[in-house]
Amino acid sequence: MKRLKITNDHGWTPRKLRKQERKIKNALLRQRVMAVRLVMEGYLGKEAASMVNVCQQTVSHYVSLFNEGGLELLLHRDFAPGREPFLTEEQQEDIKQLVLTTPPAELGWDIASAWNTNVLQSYVQTHYGVSLSREALRKLLHRKGLSWTRPTYTLAKGDPDRQKRFEKQMDLIKKKLDHKRDGRCRPLVHR
Image 1 (cartoon, rainbow, N blue to C red):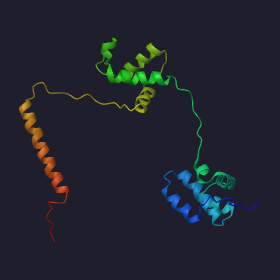
Image 2 (cartoon, one colour):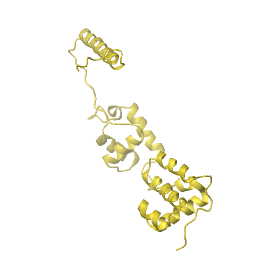
Image 3 (cartoon, rainbow, N blue to C red):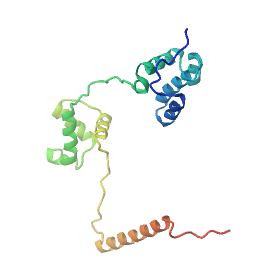
Image 4 (cartoon, helix red, strand yellow):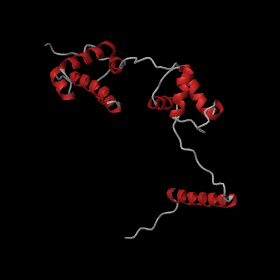
């Protein structure tokens, strides 16, 4: 097999590529840049391949991508589009708005005061004719920026004056802690 060559460096030097490697968080993309840099530094394709732990053909592919379109093409990755979702984007947005604005009791679900995946699963089945698992619904809501929260309770017999005094005391304590963290008040050090 003939020696791999960088035919068009697109203004990149091995030193610049090394700096770029350090900036890349994704390990697979960093591996691509490293392979090209090693070839640019004069290593053989099989040597670069063993150093970055890929096969020689992969290094050859990386070099050809870099020669063709520079670092931009080397770092570009296409992903498969995936399966079509069961619910359209509009239906998903409707579900989000439903969860945010309407309690289940208003829609005739007398058993629940707040949405949960069981109730939402039944709602999606009856209104859209789509059967989704509870986990799929949880992931859908998460993608839409929603998360499950536990309802908070208010003590019916709680004294509002005592609660306000407690809140003021907590604010004072927080301010004192912030004051100490700012460095204005230094703790004693025993030597």
